[in-house]
Image (cartoon, rainbow, N blue to C red; front, side, top):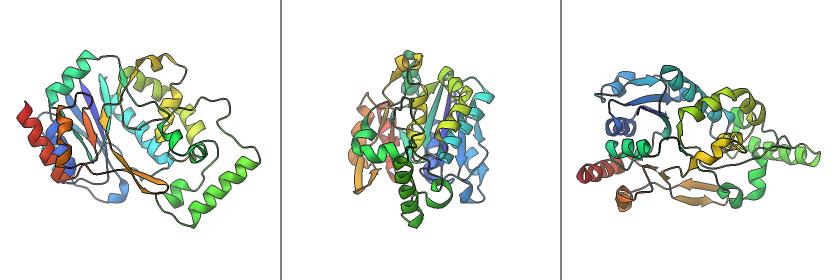
Length: 288
């Protein structure tokens, strides 16, 4: 089986190089996107650390946290990889993720579970804040990509005020749709990848000018389809903590979390510093 690892990163840094070294294998190819805001990057620096894998740098774009640009990037990465080769699985990772199993264990797992799609579909996000969850997709967020991102500025308050006005006058762009959600990180088959790309226009129509819908668009697209019968857990460990009333974020994992290497439920973890990646790599090497 051949695997495409789609890595979204802010820069070519030590953490990215450690991910590449760890996953380097003849049947593993990398598709890397470095945010255009990072400026000039050294592609050869990344290519120099792998012996077996091929590396393709995906055409760069500016990506805004919470904006539709995140969805556009995922579609671009899937399209770039699938045009190169028909991979058995496509794995979406960030530059702060790291495998917690050896390559052979990862390959064996997917060989034994061929045809399953590892993607979270749950009501976790809706339970956290039902009203804020509905605002993600029912109304139009025209300012998120251009003026807001992660900022708590005047435009954010204007944007949410606009959404409540839209709700008051009856705008609900998701009327008649089944909305599902979960983590945006996935390991999916070529069949599902092609289905997603074949429905790119549907995704643009329903999720352009939304907020944080990288966690909704695939799950909603496959609702009421045969793909729901193929969905399994998403194989990624993440421990969320509340930084503020409305900010839930993954904490950084440390050496105290090394028991994940022995946990059969996880193949990847997020998020890690370059130093903690060293700790995990050493533990994985010992377990071979």
